Length: 549
Image 1 (cartoon, helix red, strand yellow):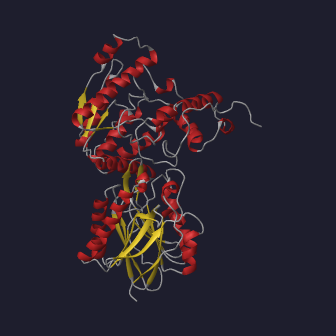
Image 2: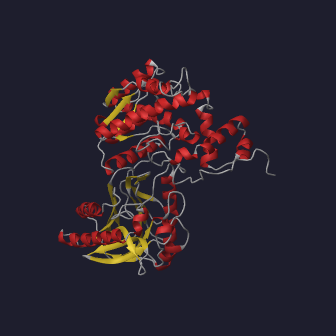
Image 3: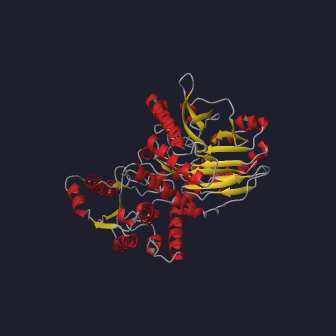
């Protein structure tokens, strides 16, 4: 028996574009066959895109997915690929009409097997238990005399279930098709999990994952193959489409292949945001973006990310100085735009603000918010006139404590650094500049944007630390309270100052209504605002200030 060459097609699919996704299956199947593969694995829900959310409940969508599958079957044969075994994901239906998350095995123009995902995740960003029915039967298919077991994503995260069934039946390869969203550090968890499952089935594990951005999720790929003892054999690079080809000998484990190096943590997060932004822009039919350039670090980082995502020539940066804007901020904004090749414009807001103030008395915070709202009107006006997508530039720390003006700097269609705290914003800016220097390029972000004290510049001499703890301290408290759900008592036990804790908790709790109205942004941490953290807006609960003992 000859070696079995398998290919893992790490592709970027588009939710709802069943015809385009079918074309992608044909394109990458051809590449797999040209590389000598006899088996090609595609990600979870390949034909429909993922996640499809309540589209799963529409019969019209299910019919379209089934027609796309029929199209793939016929075209594989018509294009001389009939002997290739193709495993792909799609939307299935139970005999009773319930939707399923399904893997389909195709060869010779026929469907050899259908497998419905057993374990339906219902935590974090996942809501599959509500829309899908669970499968119960295992799936094993013969490919050139090899027994290949097929499972879907969450099925290997849970002990027992289909993996245990396959172990009992005996397989030569465990094929896992996945739509596993990115979050920092998750790649290690996937690899460690596969390393545990391989010895359980006494067979190599081939894990294929999708790439690309879908709303507030990013898929990083990182497909890989491990030997039967869990040893890494081959791995795809992250955040790019890729075909990973590995040979499975007659006896023994796969032969070593390409093994991509792990990414630097800052490079990984930065690239995840860029991937999410690029996917959102392109898949929603935009060609360009517009954002306010203040000269500060947040807008500078977002502009650099946008330039990396879609090209600097497709970025419109608008400086909107007020009477409180410093000269160096305006200079930094202009410098940034020149570095990334953006379309740079200046639109002073003082006359517009004065027009409002001439009609209304808006002192203090009301006046500060007015400036932000005028800027929001300008950006939306440019967007409406020219068709750009507006980017909101707020970071996770600001969003946590409500330091974004609703209908002001919170306006926009996408918020790239929504899940990046302020401390990480600085780190990512440093990384991006250093990577440019290492490549012999001009760093995109002016050094003064990174080093100057952060300020909204909405009043004379204003700095963020006038009303907030230093960001390194603030981010520590937020990490404990938001990411790890620690209460006031736990935070004080950690040694945080009582006044700081009470202030931060109060700000976070009061700002939930703002966060609900903020634009989508890519999830890069374990717990992002939005799908991951669902708290009531209307609630009387506050962390108790006395001991609960």
